Length: 174
Image (cartoon, rainbow, N blue to C red; front, side, top):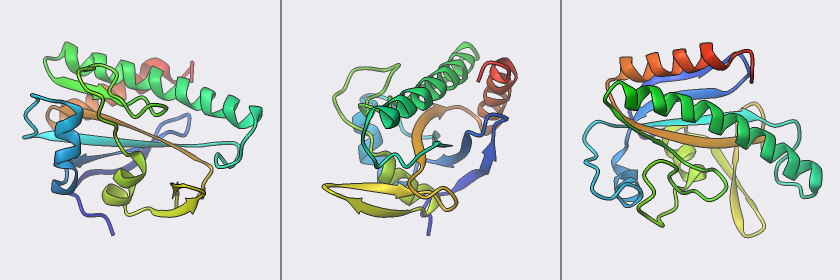
């Protein structure tokens, strides 16, 4: 069961990226504070995203790596536009590089964000052990999922507007 306040239930972009918007839960405040040192956490929103992959991403090989690269590029392009729109409107925003777990805008830390734990807390998703690590199990896609997150300190309406503008700008490219 999710343990955060959901402000916007899961939505889907025209290219299939799912996102939702949540207040930063107490359970993650220390982790988020380590990610963004000196940034007050009051009003911090977490925006987890998931993309369905064409294959099980637990597998190994060049095809899996190519698929991860494709999904990474699509997320980064979307997240950059959303964050740029929010910052241009006078708000604070950042996104996490899913490969490293590090923030991409505010780079003053080596703290790593745990996408798997965040989806457990924020959306109540299940996990499975795969060797030495946990993987997220999407309720419909299983382990054929690519998670990545954004953060914002902005009113919900401003975040929704930035996402809508990014979707409109990118819908024919992604």
